[in-house]
Image 1: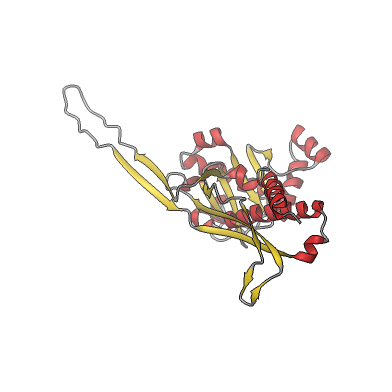
Image 2: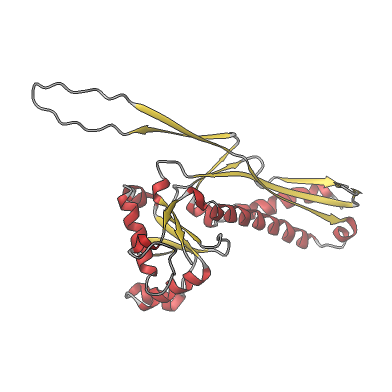
Length: 283
């Protein structure tokens, strides 16, 4: 086997899959960079004063603040293939393995995104007019969740940002089913379209783009304004394929070829956009 030629093809095939659209690319502001520390400098708004003719006024200093985050998280996918297995594996199957590695790497980023709910603003049953505690998502309140989230965005002065970038919710599969039933039962053209074609990832309803995922941390959904959640990815390691002949293990070297892919990343909800990103607490 010519591992150099296959390594190049493996990397190309993996990169094809890594470049495909997915939920975290749609939702987050993704920055591919080799910078170790990401910065978010921002100004603090001054106060508009009232005064009278002939009266003095007070100058206010321009205040520049800076937040930063170090890209430290690593997702790595090392696999080895025994040399005999490799010899008996077709080129097409090897490219299938390359494609699957890339899919798993992207899914790991989605899992990490949804697990980072501590970065977002709390949104629970009291946010939709009920008592404190988690929301029990149902066909009768799923529209209330959407409306309440949009209200929270307006109250956080995020309406212009939402108009520019859009809004989203990532539901669980069961919630998405309830939403689909609600859409099919309500409205006119929207209901007709949902009855005819069903609903897909990212479909738009009530001014919000809706997604589903099986990778949520239990009892947490994610919603808010698109492109507000910042994701930094190290450009030169994302999707890079490393081939290792005779990989070493604690028990010694293996008669195999190892293929390693990794991603270095970090999520950050900056202080000025955290109020429009929501940790939706659910049962």
